[in-house]
Image 1 (spheres, helix red, strand yellow):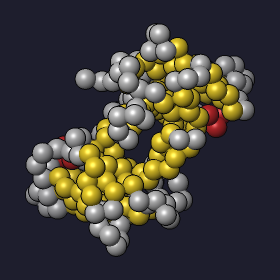
Image 2 (image 1 turned 180 degrees about the vertical axis):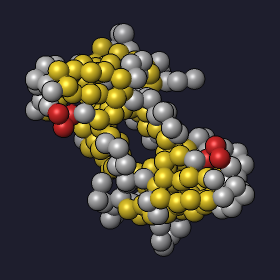
Image 3 (image 1 turned 90 degrees about the vertical axis):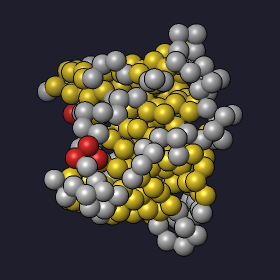
Image 4 (image 1 turned 120 degrees about the vertical axis):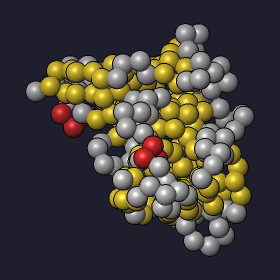
Length: 113
Length: 115
């Protein structure tokens, strides 16, 4: 049972435009959400996070939006740059239940010149 | 990723051999997670350890896989009698708290190839 779903395996976006990566979750106990970025042959690196008490968190070009009623979050990157080409993983955890962090399958983002 | 050290980076084993993957968490961190990434798949949770304790091993296959995090030394993920399906990238991460929430810092991974 996949608790964190990233339904788009890949996404191509023109350089300079907005990239929107989507993530859905099924477990209503999740109260903290994270995005990780991964380049080939490297480990994932933490990008941005959001607590369930918020609906938006912004850090430079990266903004994460959370819609709790829809159990949906999205990562917006604007403007997209060539170095943003990577695999992006959505992850979720429940602070009150355990420390396990569940990851989605990832979305490969290609930034086109 | 410099803080979490994994070795070896690449490991090749023949079917039936044993694989040992090591992970040293960031200095001062006492919580280690192991994740596995199969080809074209996401990161699958395997096990969560504190020093000398296994906290959650719900993602570990029931047979051939074991993990430990001794009082001294790195955490070790051990796979006995490897099969081709064990070929994957194995990532270790250590945990830190960011405003009360859990954030994982990952190592660069160990890529296991079973011939």
